[in-house]
Length: 195
Image (tube, rainbow, N blue to C red; front, top):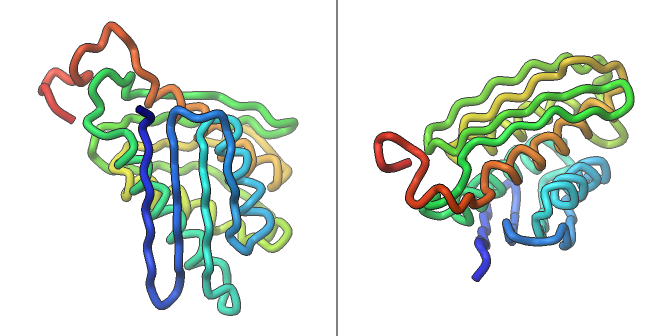
């Protein structure tokens, strides 16, 4: 049986349905109403080997903020639920991902304690129809809703598209490592005995 979650969240600002399978092959349909954000989530599922369906109806007539932030909340909740009791998983994951001029480091600890560190200076205010300030909001929401330590550091980069895409793909690869089961881990990987 796979590790999966189905989460829905409806507010006056957004209506979101996410279906996530951690042990997937990168399949699924992404529809957020923001083309560049769809592209980033496509990269996340493909490079993390996660099956992900994500359908969002947001108040895009205002701007993209609620759509992106609330999607991060729901995806974080789905990750937390799909991981379950964390028995046997590596818990930690990290990846350094190059994308042309961009080089991004992402590190994750599925500790049950939310913490977020973000070091990235994107000069362009927009990429397509996507407000680049929302990258931080998205990953912050994931870290807190998913109860994980999440560190993202852009080591180099000039092109905003490349930098953001490197972040999403590095996050996917680090998360894939963190949720991977290791046969040497017979309970949870913690001296406390719980996570």
